[in-house]
Length: 244
Image (tube, rainbow, N blue to C red; front, side, top):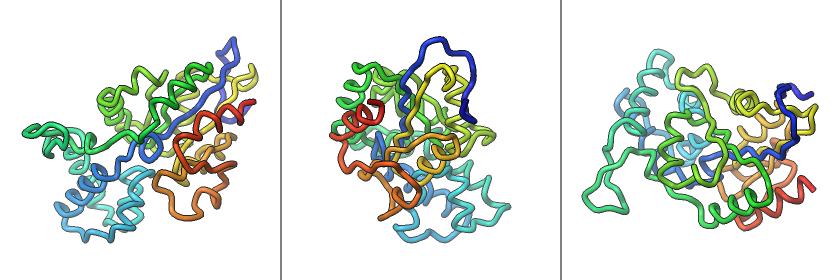
């Protein structure tokens, strides 16, 4: 039994763990806009755009630590980020003139993703998100874009940060769904960043790398993704081939 397995499963399942940001949705606008506002309000310099792109994937707290936000300002910055990202409607809705939305909805689904998810569901896979984004932030996004009808379970990080890394989230998903490799369950992580590959590896899983997301050149290969696909249209075929 793998490190991440539990023992409450009677029938084997094929489980596909899906990252959210950069895998299912193009989410940089909302994340970066809210992170910049948070940094500005705590008096910290705004990094260049290349560094801001690295905010997509890890937790926001990890990103603040990476750019060396002083420790005494990190939680204040996180609270401000969360306010703009999910708690107040501060931004113009690009789709509805005059409407205001939270930063989490400055976001869009990659073309073709719904169709690929439908194909995977029809093929009998159990689909679950596994994101470092707090679950309470994920749920309105998934509801807004209709993922609740396409994915079996929405799972992410915890608000209190007791569950923050990708490996911790994967373990949480497995606990919640009663995953048991000893009973024949098999899982695959699908994601676009090093966090996905490293988290999968820590849990004894393979990672299918998605090159349409936010990885830097060579990142997915360097972190051990067993295969890297370039376009959304390849997703269901790659998953089917992995489990064949």
